[in-house]
Image 1: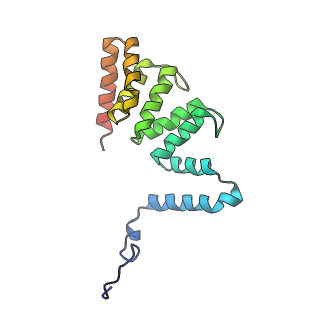
Image 2: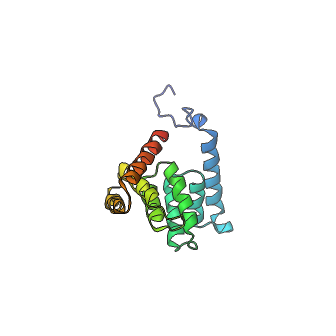
Image 3: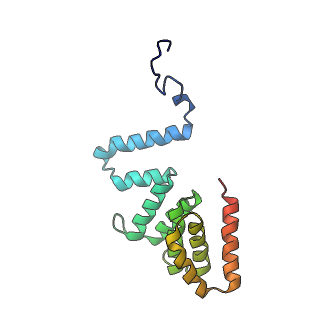
Length: 162
């Protein structure tokens, strides 16, 4: 525009740069929002939809819902699955939640070494509150098991660099 007026993002062509996946996500979320009243789409449904589309924060929220059983029936295996998805997407809280589940054997087989690994990965991502739990688990692990846990964490980090 020659007159010095501000051009919108659409006029600058920013909409043309939107990826097909992003467009699909926007359309699905828009469709859910429009259908909310007629189809009974509630907050959990919208959060789960965002989680299924890869939103790592929503993945933790869905995992929490299944773990606590307040919004949906409690399903610890489903909670673990959602926390795994969020961890794969780099969500720091997901590592701590997985550490808890593995330490307790809730929804997953009890595995103190794996719990230690997840607490370590969470700690490396700023979840400092769980450091004492990681240290407590070390009382149940041999030196070799602790070393193996840290090696798993290093390998995970190496394979998930941003």
